[in-house]
Length: 67
Image (tube, helix red, strand yellow):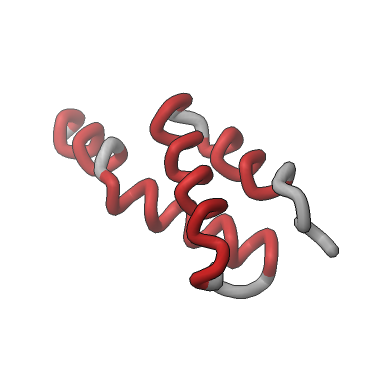
């Protein structure tokens, strides 16, 4: 069971859904097509660090957040 959970958490689908939820939480809306670079940065941050906080930080620290 532990291996299954680890495989699911390491999947691209999990990272994609996590970043999508991050956009919904932080912006109150889904990500837009023009934000694909920021969305990719979120996934990259999560993949690199394994920390959801780093993924969310990549969104919050982007220029234009809360304009």
